[in-house]
Amino acid sequence: MKRAALLAAVVIVAQALLIPLFVGPAANMAPRDLPIAVAGPGPATSAITAKLQAEEGAFTITQAADATAADQLIRDREVYGAFVVTASGVEVHTAPAASPVVATLLSAAAAENNAKVVAVVPLPADDPRGAGFTAGFLPLLLTGMLAGILLVVLVPLKWARLLGSLGYAVGSGLIGSVVLREWLGVITGNYWADAAAVGLVGLAASALVAGLGSVFGPPGIGLGALTVFLVGNPLSGVAGAPELLPQPWGDVGQHLPAGAGATLLRSVAFFDGAGSAYSMWVLIAYAVGGLALIAVGRSTRPAVQPVAEPVREPVAA
Image (tube, rainbow, N blue to C red; front, side, top):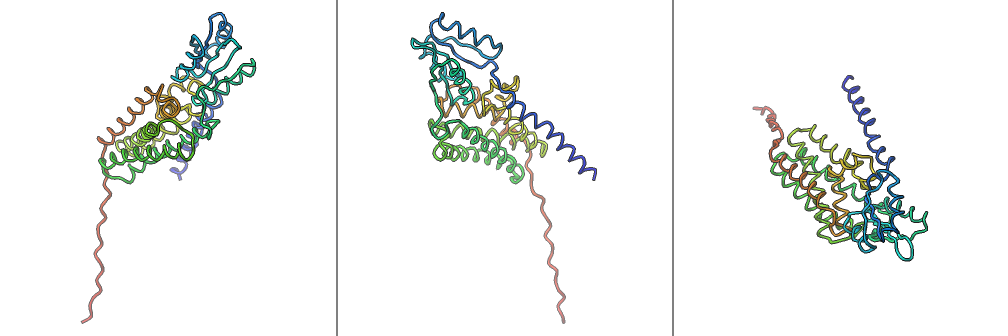
């Protein structure tokens, strides 16, 4: 009875903590040092720059010489969009593939000022609002976490866990990218680059959970699940952008597998890998660390059950 009451109390406390963790970032989305470019002659862009700077802490502004330079900043993932002053008026250049939410915010600003909207890096035709990318990324985390748990629970030898993590990553990358690209059409780009990104996300998640579980047992599995999904997912910024989340949580999320994985896959799928270096190294660190923990962890062998001797019936003389 006491144990049941204690477990119920623990779950209730966990619920009380998880609800604000999931709801808080989503309910408080707003630009926070959001990188934006302003392009055109200095005197013509001064009013736009002053208006953006009036919202203190909302935007980080980069000056660009013209529309071509601004669009290159967008393709390099240096900025999310640009206000461009041209001979015919002001244009707002966006990158829905980088963040549909930010693109919508910029498009709303353009509508208020009767400015033309130019989508420099659009989303695929099969996923025009980006909801498919967000929904498709979630199973990558869940299956990676599940693979790590199953490796600890069902695979007793640590060398087999190492091979299992690597094998899962390869299969996840090859099959997952086919599903996301060819079946659902929510990512584009080079197939092998997409497969490598998906596989690295899977390896980081599965190896981390399996490694922590190999060293610390069930508490390690719980810590891995907390890092990969329960905390990592709401702080990932996959539904919006890290710069829209309350800080420092947006930055924290980019140092967890979920946030780094979402950034890497976006960069590889839509921007030819631009802006992916840091997130790739974060995932590599988790993957290598998880594999190292598996290697130094303990193997678990199932207990050998004694074989019962068959009961022999007495033979009548």
